[in-house]
Image (cartoon, rainbow, N blue to C red; front, side, top):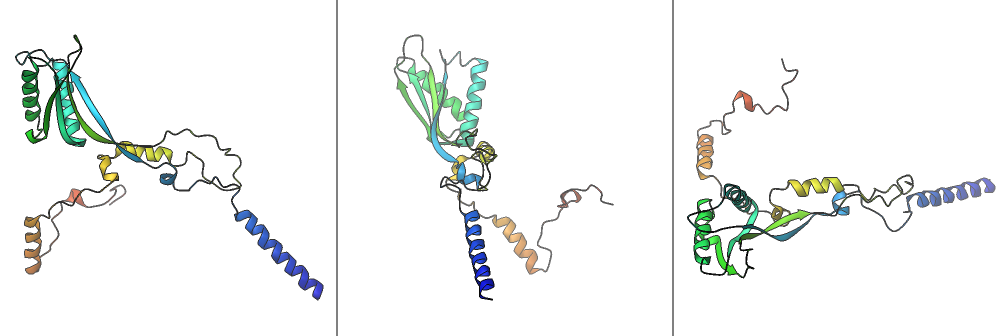
Length: 225
């Protein structure tokens, strides 16, 4: 009986040791099962600028340059932060160039209070008006780390590339990278809608907004009678 007890005791100890050895990591260089931890998204400020040739206010910009400026200003209004700067080559035509572009930016929707102007020295033949702003970009490390032997999975660890593509997609799709650092402040509530809801509630009416048949909320109408 004692022998059987000892055998069972040794078997239990061995089972515990075996289980512990299976649970222990194969090495200290472990990866997380969360792709966001392995490939964090970083947000950094970046100066973005465009350079345009300019001769005289009467001549204005060439059609291609005007289209480039319109697109640039649209990106600024969408993602830019702070002021939009105009820097013209120093010289007698600097004032005219600054005035032209300042009016052009204002007509495109840039507040005059956010337009900064200045001059810079430019080499002969390379006179360009520079318009720029500070914006934020989201990025993460490049994918393609195949250093780990994926045939050796005894430790049940994630591959180094796990989650990398997803993080890249999130960084590329986020509308305003600043939202990854700090959320935007809440907008004011709709007082008109609030008054309507409270009025209907006091009268015992339905407070929800009326919905059309197209706003049923169904994910799909396939197979519906």
